Length: 227
Image (tube, one colour):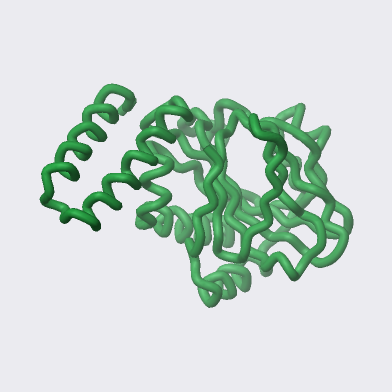
């Protein structure tokens, strides 16, 4: 499931985040790449343990944990500490797939990357190019969202970032290990959760239909979840 999530941060909040990030020690983006990605990747990143990345990443994680749409769609078990990249002057990231296992530092715990996320921190009119292109069963989907908006997609997807030919594209990116490993099962639960909310609005949260659907949701989650 490919899902845009709007307004994770307000425009004013993005301005404050960018002021902090732009002052950071940007370096070669291949510091966090595997062998396959390093051949395709041309960008800059903030070192993951620098104060600018760590403090801003904590703000992002807290915002996501308080975002009902993100929680419903991702069912997060563990969120990898957000990283930050910057593309300009023709920089790009050719077609690749994210590593299946990510590690918190050289000796930290590992997570399985079920979902990938990109949080846009530049307005689309501030740069040319820089589309996130995700390959799906229905063909390539081109994503270029407003500052403060996020896109969530399966980590198994082939994807790329097109060259940025004007301005700068700044984003946060990270991975999520979900309570529910299978993408189709997560999508079923998300659609069911959305339907329950609609039924509750139309008939009342205490209505029989909403209660029965909620029971179905939790029984499916109980069957599929890994905790």
